[in-house]
Length: 435
Ligand SMILES: *Cc1c(COP(=O)(O)O)cnc(C)c1O
Image (cartoon, rainbow, N blue to C red):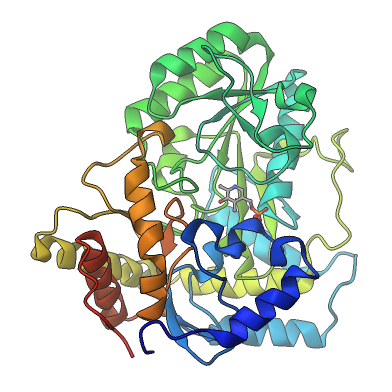
């Protein structure tokens, strides 16, 4: 596309949407507020590419925020969903595919033997925490600054001031008493974990962590730190919940390596296991999971849970991923991006990458905790965002978000994005990189 072409169709639709939906969107980051341009309205997608309502094509490195590890419109997934749709959209009753998806999920988490399907990652986390509170008889949850676990009240918190305090609501409308059930510690900081358990250990029902925190930059944790955290959690008699909504089935089939090291009691899943359809899941061992109704006293339900279309998309996706070639291809694409950066000698860009998940960070260091992130590097990314769009790249519209490769991306596409990232990091906006 030509540089600085106006997206008239998107502009018009945004004006209309703003009069109908709060902020014109159904999820806040879609408003593009961080990057200073109007949101792009997508008309359709195919493989690695999205096409907007003005007919411009973009290579998509957001991939619906992670679920689409096979890219858009994977033939296997689309066929499975179409066939399922022909048999009925929802039964609100048992059906055979639920067991099939559960089996595929559990084969990626061999320590576990039960899974409950829900409708979103948010719900999965709510359910996992409810189980933890029920079995421990305790109220508090320990989470980490920069960790995202969906939008339930108790998790929309930030650290209070002072050492090891319970959280303050980070959203209006969250009761202070609910925010106070969450204790916030720092990633990559054993001391802050010590303090949290010293102050609240007897009341902490669960520690919840993204084994690879990927919702506030990509903050890869030291293995020592994760091990310490797991030990401290067990010693306090709390459960450990690995929130793998992004990382489950992203880095290899099933659990990410850090999640395996943590040996969590429960895992929350979402995104990839629904292949682009709404889903979430909690997985764990039978003893813990059978606390859920109807067997146990922990209530959880959902009109559309185990939805046949979501389950069909999940099964098709996990079956494709169970071929060894899938992750090998993703890793090859990632390594290629590393090589392009290395060969360029650019010192202004760090591609923080794990498998097919990468965070373009316009800075040399590699942060491991939220407070270590360089804000001017984020601003630099956000300021460059429109140029990426105009060059034919659709990236997550915030410098704090991670990008995703899919098996539908090509080497040429990954190379051209990497070259564009290098140009932007070095402030050399060299014009169109793609038609
Ligand atoms: C996306 C995400 C969630 C929330 O999932 P939704 O399906 O958006 O509710 C929870 N935890 C993590 C780690 C996530 O990445």
